[in-house]
Length: 403
Image (tube, rainbow, N blue to C red; front, side, top):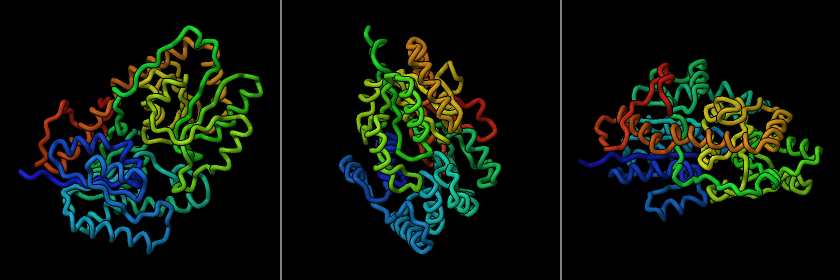
């Protein structure tokens, strides 16, 4: 029997390469024809080198031009009509919405939409975001509903938000916590006898956008520097020019000159980087489910993050599997860092607990099977033998769902 053709569509090729490559490989190994779509980027050719069909989409992530956006939807619809996929899977809000509109126009039988985090419009406080929010909600309500469509969200807070806004019918929402991490790649860092006497090395690894808590991270560094602490603040990541909330390169370089942070830029070998630091920090305002925290947990690093949607799924009990701080609170962040600087034994205990939780809940093999279960709901002919066959928890029953 000919296996279905599946399209995976995201707003960057970087996302497909770093977050969905294992899933794409799983589909291909099972006999699916997999097509990857994203705007032009340096990772597209890498995906092709791995044997995937990757196509560049004429998509400008920052565009608000109605004619340009309509042209993109029509381009996608023509592409889907030509390729005739059985299922289109869109990732992030814009790709999910446009992919859904285009799929409906092209008569694609099934649609899966995965929204990981609520994005700039829902997290920013600036005027443009506040103006756009009701418009985006209305567009999402039109695009994401439908009998042959399922919306995948990564945390219960986002489910509550979608329910309250009546964007998608409750029966069409599924909870799958995260995109999954291959935790076999992340090893526990070996400790040496002289670690206690070395400066504590703090890492924030994320896209350099303000809603990741970059400002609070730098301010915490400034506070602890005034105390003459020797804590090192490392920053890994690059500005995201496609995001209106991006931090400028000049701003980051200014912090480096001030001696507040050490900027590593983009880092491709995260398993190695995690072995060279002591604590992972993510003071984000809102997440889907942050992959960087899970990767750091895989290396038994202690985690400091905010009591925010998505983040609290990884660090759920402050003082047990990590430390929680309030959102937008640089002083509380500095206090948490100081606590681990003074108590290295606590840091080690929290790191080991974080690793145990990650192994139990966030391994990519669990997430991949949950996603395949969603595919089977929409396309009953899909029959793939997997290691796990646990049903995805529908909304209202995720209290018994551990992933």
